Image (cartoon, rainbow, N blue to C red; front, top):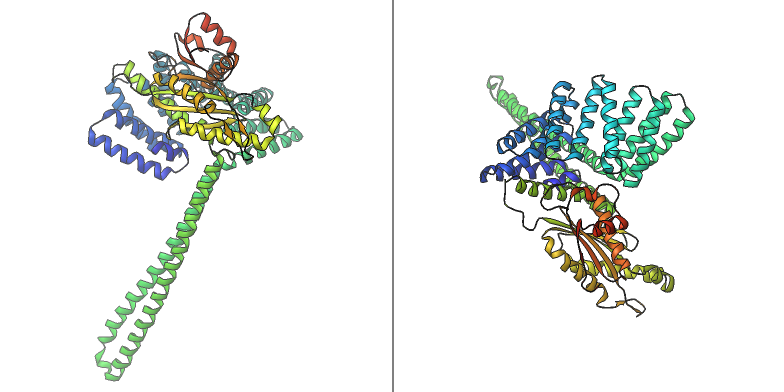
Length: 547
């Protein structure tokens, strides 16, 4: 819950969820859970810019993981401590922690993470004026990441563009920015694409190329508009803050009125003490005070009534804002035709599942826990066979009905906790979460049967025989070794299996169960490379019996 709430920007809700998890971990005496929650709280505080609070959580998590001997966890804690120290300009300490993180990632052979935090080291060098050292690190990372790790390549290009700008190499900065823009577009990474456009605008402006800078600025504004949906959470939070401010102002007015009433009561007591002035004066004063109390009480009642009305109105508006936020979030991650989630949703949440899967298998490999059972991820890619012929022969309305019915049948095969997304056109992606890889063949067979077993009934009583081809891959790629892999790479592997299924005559499935060595999936992955690996017996492949 904490991870999910943090991902959609509900930081207050995320913190409450993490605090509940932390209390449970302390009660159960689980150091592993306690370390994980402290690490997550540190990451959330760093994301909000509260780096000193983040450091306190990271150091606590680091202390626990050091006692438990969890090398990879120790590496992650050191890496994020370095990031927060850099943000606080404590460069010497930041460099020490970043270097330790890189050493530990290399020790457990997590080269992608080691290179990622070499970029942190480069940013520290830049901040300290060590531009030559920074450039050497950046170029090494670019050579290592190119073609292997798309996310690492993007981050390296960002740092490279910033380094070139700071050292007045504006043409080089623009070249890095242009490379980054193309790669960010391919990966659909709008936030990092914005950084590249900003670097390009700054460099053009520094070179006094104002016409080109203006065109680049227009492009930057257009990209930021596309990113607008992701910033609506902050806008809603600001409106809620303004609402809270109005409510507090009303409470303050009520308090002022109450103080006035207390002063009136004091005046009454003082007047009663002046009995020597005379009975008439006493009576007059008493009547005056009583009348004053009466009018103040009435005024207070009217004010309380107005406060209740305005509080109710504010609550209603707040609820409307919350519903609007939920609608915006839902629309941005939902396919409008089928009602399934879209690829943006999967890219947003799959990283957490991959990280959790890695952590469970890492604990097992290091002897810190039992062998994980039901902890694999199965990534399926499905393509409707000959779908273009359906559109050409019956029209796009019938094609849309086929897509909708296809989506419903997928939902009957997978669990509610699994991911089912429309990847694009007639292509769908499904992820069976935290299951045993032995069930992959059963799921693949059920998918093919669910589609071809019964004809698709259309609104005009047309009954169409529809089939599909399926490719899948099991994660971790090598069960006996934790080697992190991103969603894009898993999709490439599933897609290669899908091509083999299509080549086998369609209406069938092909699955990639495991690799026998980590070099087998380095670089680009496609149908040709998979066929080569099969011939070399470097992978385990499953096919539908008889296909």
